[in-house]
Image (cartoon, rainbow, N blue to C red; front, top):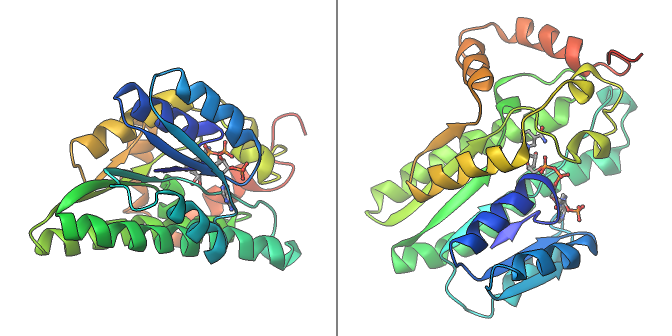
Length: 256
Ligand SMILES: NC(=O)c1ccc[n+]([C@@H]2O[C@H](COP(=O)([O-])OP(=O)(O)OC[C@H]3O[C@@H](n4cnc5c(N)ncnc54)[C@H](OP(=O)(O)O)[C@@H]3O)[C@@H](O)[C@H]2O)c1
């Protein structure tokens, strides 16, 4: 099961699963998921594509029910999106959609699939968190908050499952800025981070996929991001918030 497989990191994760011979159940909110599914079929695996809004319980149920009780070996909970701009100027429905996709829908699906994995004592879960979870996200406050939740949640669930003596592993992939549709969708194209050079989503996905298959707890993709997260863990939050302002403030991009 791969969520958010129509583009970016999720698309590349689905390709890696297909290359390893896993049948795929993929989901996104847009009809583009059907085109992506055709690409995945080229690897000779069975592919089912679902169009659903994972910000809603109905959307998650629709996706989950498509599995029709089939064993889920891998769950790659990757779907998510950002929202740039000042918090007080953001539309609350959009804020809510970020939280409901990145947190509520994500953990609702993980709970459903995780219960089955626990029963079988077998399974791998990869959650796409972010290095954003290490930093208060000035001009991306809600998004960074959702990723702080996800990074934290992932470690806690992993520890709970370890205690239950199961072979179910939980891995958190924490990418840095990656060249996907993310910044355009978040309305952050005019920001410094939106315009700077970013990591290749295929490289990021490979790092995450391998960490999941090895049962690792977490992986930060890219050397620069590893340094950033190490430094962030000993930097005062107020200083991190000011650093984030420089790269995420609307109009902070080089071309502006
Ligand atoms: N790009 C970065 O710099 C970066 C850095 C760190 C972490 N991440 C995380 O990486 C993950 C993948 O993002 P990406 O960078 O690959 O961006 P992307 O190219 O925009 O891909 C996001 C995927 O998630 C799906 N999605 C978003 N909201 C959804 C919803 N409510 N219901 C169903 N599907 C939904 C999108 O499908 P639809 O188009 O159909 O909505 C798309 O398939 C996200 O969790 C993001 O937070 C990204």
